Length: 151
Image: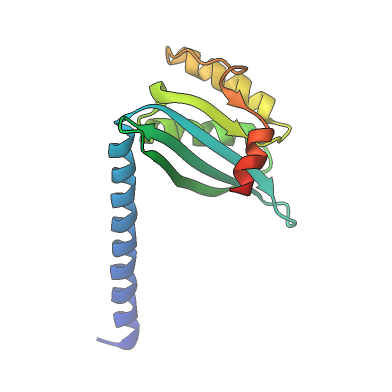
């Protein structure tokens, strides 16, 4: 084999190992979430000096043995246009992938101006899914977000 062929094979092996590692973590999180009653999600959205929007998602829960869990589950860039739709799509994908729609208790969000749109749309989507979700009761704004950033 040529050197470039060996590099490609090595790259494929490394990529496979990394994907396998993250799949194991994902499966572990899903298993641990089965033991929880309520799940909190923290959404942090901010823009860089280059005007690129970023989303970071953390998930928190306590299992039946009162063990606290916190996991970083998403970091992605967002398109500045239609950011509210992107946030809803990301959030719904997380709820589906981690099977936590019925366990979602609170969402902690930063003080981004489009959060009111996010709250309204999420309430409508959740009601279509036959899940009671109140945008006033189930969102925690700014102060908790600031505390979350400090930890």
